[in-house]
Image 1 (cartoon, one colour):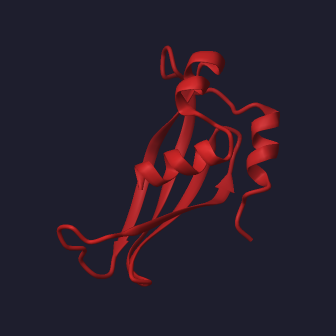
Image 2: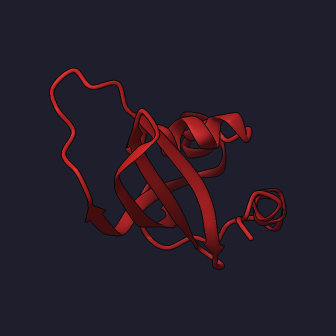
Image 3: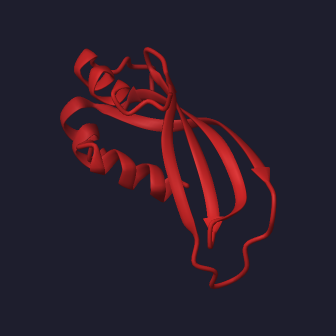
Length: 107
């Protein structure tokens, strides 16, 4: 799920290394709520989705689904918060970032 979020954000134009270096902003996982439905097995080819469900001033709720051959194995909600990269203190997202991300929010 972590990798799916990283790739999803990169697709939207937010390279996490660049954000940390240039905007002093990083995302950290605050809470994770996972519902397991069926087990995955070693070497299974899994699909993992990431979808923005909610956005706050300094937080995002990301919905994940992990599937194998279109069969749901687990779903999760991960709350990310934005903090300063140099000291991990809370930092709000820029209005530009919030506007760009809001267009990807699920309905």
